[in-house]
Length: 321
Image (tube, rainbow, N blue to C red; front, side, top):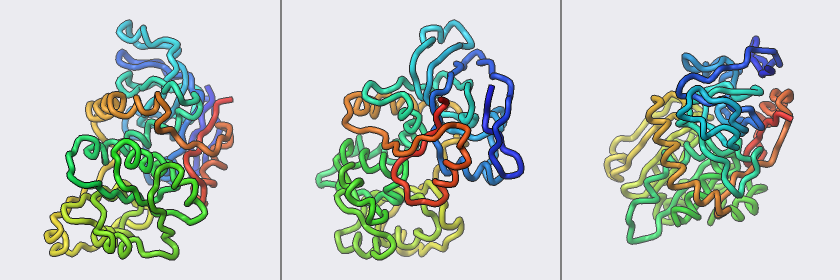
């Protein structure tokens, strides 16, 4: 089968053996693969595949199940699905644990569904508590990088499912698109001080951050009392200083998470929770993946160039045909 393998820091099309599904796995004929910033890091040599995963990138796909590793999963044959992967999505076929597979939502195109698993799992595993927490006031959520794949999904999640007042940082050129997704306020990070604006308004109850060190201090300032900061990316630095007095005074909670490195049981539970709590809204069309760029699998290097350049809105996906 064809796969986009990595050689000397570059993506190269190569023929590799077609995988065989293990006892707990299914084999997916890939319709499309979502492109994530982690894929760029892997190609650059900074984020290798975990043991047992294919050596080429790809953390999420959509497609059709064409084989199963045991009769226990026979009912899944020919189902149109999307799946969360430890790697290997940039290929014609991929084998994945059946517990990491989700049905294609009714109101989502099969190709666009490739842009769901990674972002939905990331957002829900960090902001899912908003769906079950009782509050006597409307909470405020600040999403950094609102124009990206995670950002466009997080805005919809926070505003439409959690009912929160939703702020985001992004370039002003994307403001109308993000407001259409549910953002109440779009802050142009190039010219506006998000921390000062948030403090004026009483602070953010939850912040989802993909930036890292460069935003650490302003994020703490932007938090409301008892606020939560979830750091899920390190686009602008890995090391920052913390003023512990400010942390204590706000009773703030700071978490840092990744998805790929979690134990399989945790990833299975995240997918099960998604199916119960988020998939109904995708089935009805209340929320939807934002896929703005489709490129053939063979043009994966160009997809990476577009992502690295920034300025795009939503997800980039690689199509098998």
